[in-house]
Amino acid sequence: MSLGKLVSLIGGLWTAALTAALLLTEQAGLGNILPTGSVATTFIVICGGAIATLLAYLLIGAMIDHDLSRLRRLIESHRTGEPVGGVPSSFYLRGLGQSIEQVLNSQQQRIESLTGQRRELEIQTRISEAERQHAEAIFQSISDAVLVTDAFNEVALANEAASQVLQFDLEEARHQPVERLLRDPALVKLIRDTRESSNPNNRRHVEHPINTDSRQQVFDVTLACVTNPQSEVAGVVTILHDITREKQVSQMKSSFVSSVSHELRTPLSSIKAYVEMLVDGEAPDEPTRQEFYSIIQSEANRLSRLIDNILNISRIESGIVKVQREETSLPSVIRDVIDVMAPQARAKQIELSYTETPLFYHVYADRDMIYQATLNLVSNAIKYTPSGGRVCVEAVVDDHRHTVTVSVSDTGVGIPPEALPHLFEKFYRVSEHKKIAKGTGLGLNLVKHIVETVHGGEVSVTSEEGRGSTFRFSLPLSHETP
Ligand code: ADP
Image (cartoon, rainbow, N blue to C red; front, side):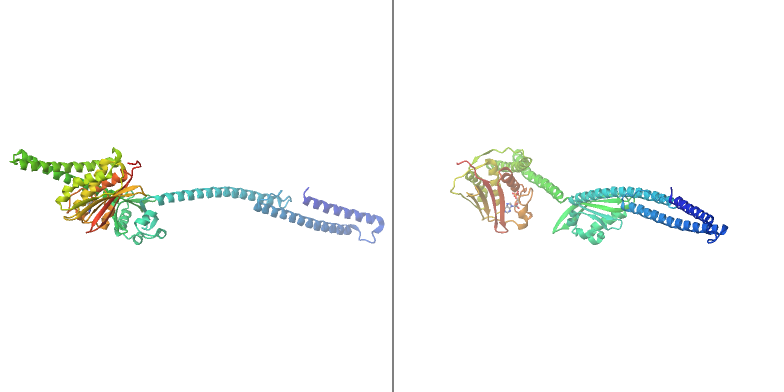
């Protein structure tokens, strides 16, 4: 039974009880004391009704209070998530409670689904952040310089290599206009032109020199348009690939080809000319013929030396050279070189000497190769020393390091300091020396390969321009007691 019905019942019962009490009073002869008839009855009924109404009012108020507090707890429970039993049960608030509960339940479901979505989004955000960091790490580790500009010609992205090559501060680069960031107006123009071309498929390759840290580097610059979802040009990606080395190598190769062909052509034309003279009978007597033969022989030797050098270097570089190591007496190799070079030295009035060490030692080496390396150094010393100079060969044993160092010193033209680091590079020749003697720039490179690549030794040079040079090579001593 609901509380409302209970209150109505109590009110009805109370009225009936009062009416019955009145009738009993009348019958008991108390009618003269109390008011009689229908007036009294009405009075009593009204009093009973009023009391019942008051009671009903109080009870309904209590019920509503009770239901409101249930409602509050219901709402609170939805807020805190703690379960609470039932909705308001009174006639007045049950419907409202049920509606509120429905609303709260649907809101609860919405909150749960939004919480799920939020978690999903958080996971997605973390994945995206990890991917972004991954992409950033890859982007930063690219050795080519990469610069991305937006539709306003401002820097959107740049990597470490770009900041080094184009000399800007990576931290401050973002959103900077390229013309303010880059000190290279030609590159700025290239980027602007590419963006303004408004052709999304526009991709250009330009060879572009950049001066960095007092040296010039050459870059293959790729410029490509970045498009937005509407396929409009929204920026430019600029990639700078350093091709300085390739350029140098190709320049070296072409200068090698021209210098080799020149070197090959010179002895060949000389041989051809002397052979033709012999065939045409232009050498009437034996001494002239002998002279021609010896010129032909020396030119043929020169040719074969050049070809040998080229072949030897390429064999060592490709690792197919056959090394015949044996216990070798270095002093005997040096003496052989001195004997071969002595006529040339004499012809130039150069004093050629060899200072032997009193120690007896051997190296475990390919005799022919070491002979070739020593010959190249002594022949260079004579070549780049003017008449009247001195060339001295010396071998010093270092017991501690267990090595022997051969040095070839001359009182020649010397080498400019800036040329020293390049001296052992293939095809390198000091430009000032080209007038002094012919060469291919292969001799020292072969020495380096023979000593360092094949024998695990070391080569070095010290020189003073105008005063002379000293080339040294060290080899490990043989472990065998001679
Ligand atoms: P090349 O055939 O030109 O002599 P090398 O490789 O033997 O080739 O030498 C490379 C360059 O090093 C030479 O062109 C020369 O300029 C320089 N050079 C080598 N030896 C000497 C030396 N003793 N004195 C001065 N310059 C030297």
